[in-house]
Image (cartoon, rainbow, N blue to C red; front, side, top):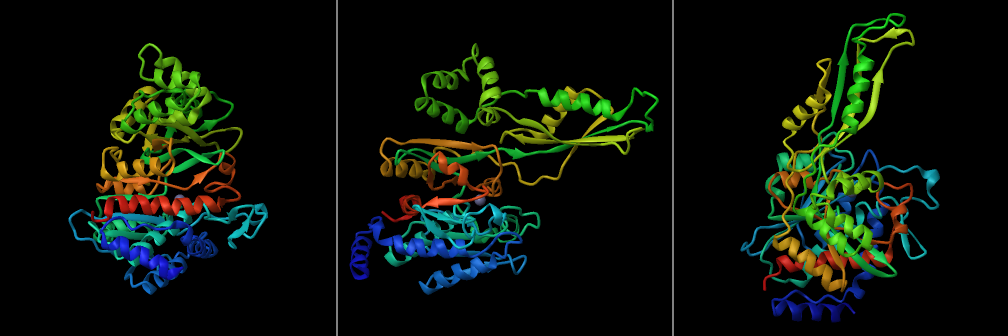
Length: 462
Ligand SMILES: [Zn+2]
């Protein structure tokens, strides 16, 4: 089998085309690496260096040199590079090695054993983010074995600390101190996916944008005093009024390339009443009614329309008969990618219209990042590969209302695209950060093939 495969690879390499890989023959190796990576427990505090050691061994055994970069020796990042002829700038393929924690009593199986049951592989990280990590690893191995000529370098990055990079060991460290090692024309990473219905992929989501976290504290101040004496400057009263005003406030709706395309395409695969609503978003006569509907019934879509302001915490009071001198609220604010944050805070201040209440921005967790274009060679390749692998599929560019490590890369001028394996609606209960995580074995293999197809489409010398 190996000899046959090698012969096929050599034949295709000689004709300088994308090497023909018979993916069925790769399944055993894909599964082996993927399960091994899930079995390495990288839940908090991370210990990602254990995963890095595994990847380093596998890559170096194939003759692919690696470099590790560690701010904290237990939480290393690993970079490997396959050289191209330099006619195009590099492609960065990255995945994070850490996973979120587990509550063991919620798991029907050992969360770090990568148990195979009912057609699924079960374990923490089986969805987030070890499929991408395994797919990127396999792509590197297959490219190296094929010996195919590349127009651009392929940079493999296994990064630590994505889930809670408060110490800055992962992408922040790499961007700030080792950007040369990962600088690229494009990147692909987690942040997309595909929807399976009745055994067929119906939609592929490609992450092309994300909102910018811009949370603040609202701090109301007044004079403290006895609870038996009503005071007009009671900070609780001022804060309560301010929270109500911003909580009901609707900043202006603004679509970008991604969200406009998203709603247009969503309309083509939705029921007639939903489709009409998505189309009417841009109809001046109908948009207000549609936005009202989405606010009530589809809040995830509503959040894609505008910068959102969501009160999440209140803190005030020292005793039942004491007026405190200060009261504060936290507002979780997710800004549109093009929002001018300072201007936005000024507008919010006008809405509050109360000098006793001050807006205090919380430290930024992610830089503002531009929407990645839908016109690049990388995006087109992802779209074409989706259509080739899944005939009749609808490709949806997506703006996440959450935040990811793509923010740091996009902010450095690297258009970044989120991809991910296919899952059914039921699988959503076993997705990223769920009590129990699992991935269909068949989705794993298809996703490795998808990644390979996308990478080779933009990198192989033709
Ligand atoms: Zn993740």
